Image (cartoon, rainbow, N blue to C red; front, side):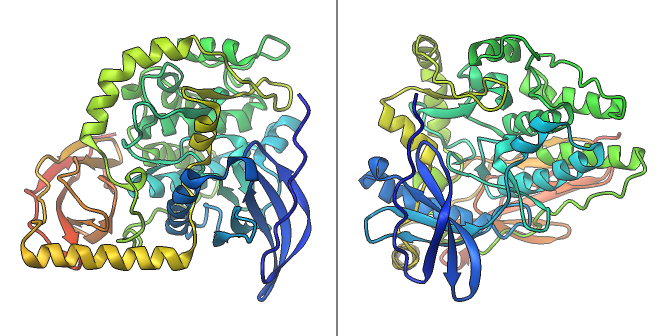
Length: 471
């Protein structure tokens, strides 16, 4: 099939077009020069064919999501989001070099560099998870390098709030790095599946191929899916890769999600231990302690906390969807020597495109107006007694050898509500319903959770405690 030609670059006030950087199925990326302050930037512009009212509505939440996350040093920075005069939404982002997918295909990366990349990108993912956000498309091509050689995670285009994906939502996925439960339609994404994808990405950078790729063999999407669903990736076959690292990656890519590290932080800690074993400087894990001031960061269902009703509906429909989706053909694209494949499942073609695009934004002015309206409405309802601030009642805890992961169900929050989490080290605020407390082996970690609405904090939950497992 002939590759699509890039669209015409839009006229953006304050920016001068330089040349085309690349084209994809849903967007083009152009190099622009910003006039003030003067700097080179990458501008991602949606193609006209997929822009409709649905995309325009979703545009706002995507930019808000990136604004919340891109302050992390290992997440690509977004400078601006708006809509061009021709109606196409665009994002202005920091200019980065080519992705790691181009490097590892030319030859495996040094172990020390891969460990550092794994820690930094893992820290970015852990921070996103604490904000209640899944990336859902972790792979080498979505890890770029800044002008200073630092890795950054890009493309949250199919990101979703943890546990909030609708059961009938079409899902885009990149086969070589997708967890078995994703390929089998048993899940639309979870923290455990993100652990798997990050480990598969680290494996690829070390091996120079994806985990289940056979050099010179059949590596179509169907072949890879069959191998992934059976588990047991091929050995990396590098003398400088220590057995402890191979075992760590094998555990993170276990067939059963329950057998993997329960958080990305656990995987990061394992990578740091390998650095110590090899006598390398330990890469710092940049993980936010307190969430950003994001009380109005989202006003769509896609960006809210876990929906218990949605989870129940997903379970009941899962069997029917799995049977119907298995009969659908796979749309495969080739990257390098392997048939990597981005598979679209379920729904019409346009609906599948929307799934890959994710949430986008209309502009800062409209977001501010909507945010003010939400806060005012919440304040009026609380002041009049029309809506009581709910109480979190069902906190669960799971411990690893380095941390305790606390989870709870949404007690009935409204747009603009946040959770206030109190631990022995202080208070944090976030919108997600997962909170990780790092601790020493054998230490007891406790939290209480309350809902904050329009500046007022509701009743605290009962205290929940758990002990970090001994190593």
